[in-house]
Image (cartoon, rainbow, N blue to C red; front, top):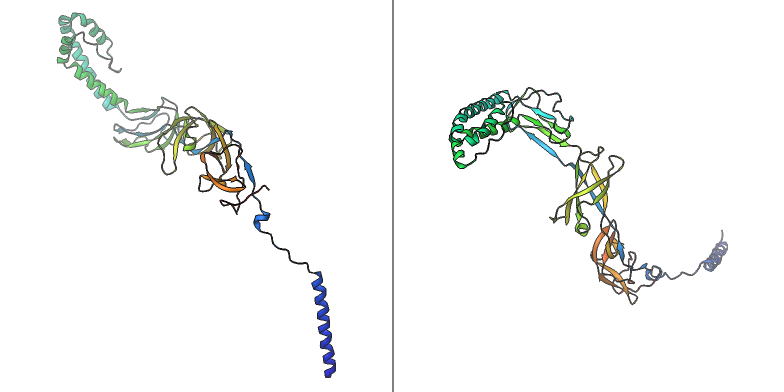
Length: 368
């Protein structure tokens, strides 16, 4: 290929490139100027209307048995077998025998002391009939009703101090109170259920020796439970003892009603809450269940609700003044989930109604 052809080819390439460039430049639209965010994104504004707000008070916590008894031995002896064994999971009604320890040796000592007192009273009566004939009938009646297998009745009351000293000199009062003390100890050999419930811990077996101070087990009331729930200081003035609380749990189906029994007035400094104690009673409930619910507190008068994320430094919000944003301090008087209840805003005040990336004091705003 000679130089002439090479030149023609190069010229053709230049001409074709120029033609293609002109076609593409005619089809391309001119670049548009990008508008600023402040021109395209306008904040939402709300108008404040204060009213009475019925805000439920959130309640949550674990259930605990209201009555839970740790049983310790106050006497020693061999544990006897009873009709219903003291085993974990065994239910007892109020008054049923939980534990019985062999008391035969101690019972004989009590009977011996009662016999001794009976003998003293028998010897006292003839002398009393001579020295204090007016009181003799009362002591004679007491002696007639005296039974070794029954608890001692109270001694007749002396008619005057002289009679009191006379009886005391015969050691009657001393013997009487020794026996009453022994009767109290004798009663500890048998432990009865103080309420209906369930054995939740058992550390003994029939036939084993029980020692003084030994822990025998635990007995729990299964009819009444207590829930301990923290309540914020915002809501403390809105609840009262006796108020109904609606509760539920994920463990069983259904709604449960409780009642506020006590309110602690000591503030937890870490959480700034107080403890509220709620009583519940239902066969479906079990100790350890986690429950949630709410109490209907008294209405919060003349207040306004807004989203929690609109707060600045936890106690200020943006309000509109002369089409510009300014910060205004508000009083937080309650909470409802992700919203807060505030006071300090006049009716008709225009406020920022949503989070706005360009929000700052002095920023110019207008309606969407």
